[in-house]
Length: 65
Image (cartoon, rainbow, N blue to C red; front, side):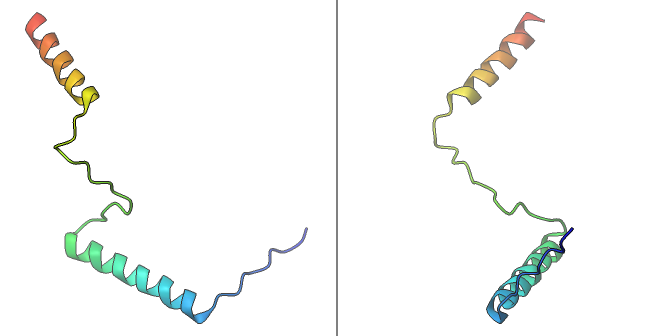
């Protein structure tokens, strides 16, 4: 078996990685818990048919019972 070669990093890549790690740790410290990295904000103004259907199904189940 061959050993895997380590990829050499430039000082710029090391700097960016260290900055991101520090920023992430500061964010966790500030909020008290980790925040999602790739959170997509969904607007409340956008029409979402599936959401309305779920609400209708829940309300109809409670009326029947």
